[in-house]
Image 1: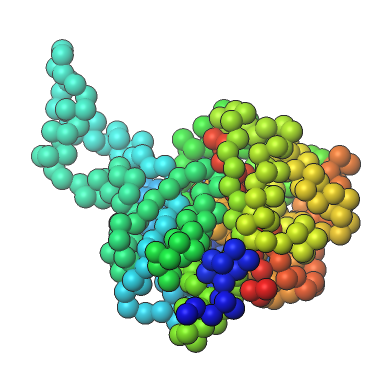
Image 2: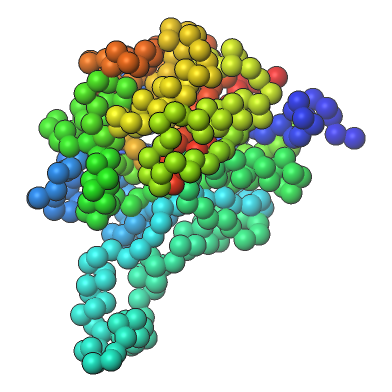
Length: 429
């Protein structure tokens, strides 16, 4: 009979985190990232990867220090995911085949424009009634290009990771906008809770910054245009915030049932206590102004965790630095936590330093949330020099703070009505 000490308030397996890995514009690896993040260092910089003349936004948090065979989003995303997973498995003390399922959050993929143009140049001349798709297929048959093929297949990253790390079953790839990383974690939690596995590999990666991406987000008026100096552009919850800074990164968490982790003598870094997810049908890119879906998401995560609002000691905010989203998130948190939010719960945004890592954000911030509890250090919200009087938060302004935290809420609210919140605790109870 299973020991009830390993079950949660609903009789489900308690989920432990036993390994973590992370890459952002601040560097590679958890140690370097945490040192930079807690010192208030910004990873935002001028874009050098491609020309930015004529673009309203010319800054980003790109990851340019990992070698890849060809400069496209799929190769970059795979390389970062491979490195963070290697780090997480080493910390978890696992080697050989992982023997558990893989849940991957990855960006929507499409070939780079340079690759499209090169393929078009190789394609046969167009005929009067010829089909462009047939022409491109002919060019590919004449000169196969495996790297281009990988870049055009949505599931290629997860399949390569599965082969590399020996995961079990068909890998799952999901893309739910800015909530993707948190949703991948939720899928891993549910797989263990349902008894389908004792461990799960949850990975989120995004290396998709390109000129096209900047143009698309600029057309939505979502990006900051405060290009100089780059490190000052992301200013969540400030009065003069004007948009998010697009960025890249990846994170991996090894999840195990607490019973399994204890049985093999693994070090437990934290507990994935609760997950909440709700949809928002208000608009394809804008969140509902009344914050209703976000409120429901936070409350669902708390209920799933079996804890009350007063148990949360720190909030890792979605905190994008966009005028509307920051205001909505504040209203949602205020509705849930009441007056205690204003001066009783510190609430900071990692995005002030690493930018918005899009698909990877929920997992990157989950790693930093657990690290907050492990180290007793609250990372700051930098660039907070012009407070918004309408948003009364303790954002841990500009400088880190020591604090003992036993439970963290991490929010991820994305385009397309995707909302996810995670509750993590230091101890099972």
